[in-house]
Length: 392
Image (cartoon, helix red, strand yellow):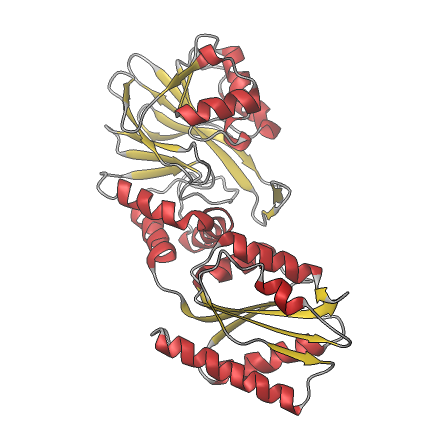
């Protein structure tokens, strides 16, 4: 990957990790990812904005081989996919200083063992003049770690946002030309990484709304030369009320829960509700996370395993609780034979969700006529709640 010019004196470097399929041993990457670094060359000084994941360090160092000096390394975020190669860059450019927030300094010293005398910490709104290129630093805590910041390049109207507004998408293109594909990748990224910090993101969207922005340059995925595209998407995901959607993550062992899910889906669809079922034995957890962004209701479906919920359902419930979607209503359906505490177990796992719990439907064995009637009642209650919320 060669340097790509964004504006005179501003170029995108970094690495495209085409084959990576899992992030943090947790997050699926169906489209790979990229680690974007940027060079900003002023008349007097040169700054490198972020580095790359150590797995791709050779690519970054090859790109820097003809760069005679770097005066500053701007560390927006201490996570190693951005900061992991700072020690290598400091080894090559021994006079360079690392610029970051005070909290990031502590994290980088702990994670990468960078000496304290290599740091310059900056406060919110502080600027740095490179000679005709002015960097303005904007603190953005909890997007998605507490030490994060953005950089605004004043003269060129470029906002460097690190993880914020990014996407796990491997691409050789500089700009987000295929907006449909980028939208899906960015939504997946928002759902998996940013959604738990929605309240902080609201403040950051407010903080940058008056900036004159020509280009948004995140640290994953393509650069946006149409900033409105990604800002509009985030405003929808963050501010818009949930949609007329019921998400049903479920597991089934002998078919009882599957039959319940199929019946409930049929009844809800007939009443005008969009239903998205996810069989957790084959589900890409990122697809589930994306569905949660818009869902007004979650119905958790589980068989009983050793008196408790199925382990896959426990995991999905934990995930939904951690992601904190805008969901308004939750219910639980399930089946057991000789006894179950799954309902209580799952109810205790959704304490982060500001939801109204709709009466669960738990049945004994395979669903019978009276059980289908109970599911009819659940569907009616969901429809009623959606109507009252003004989304149906």
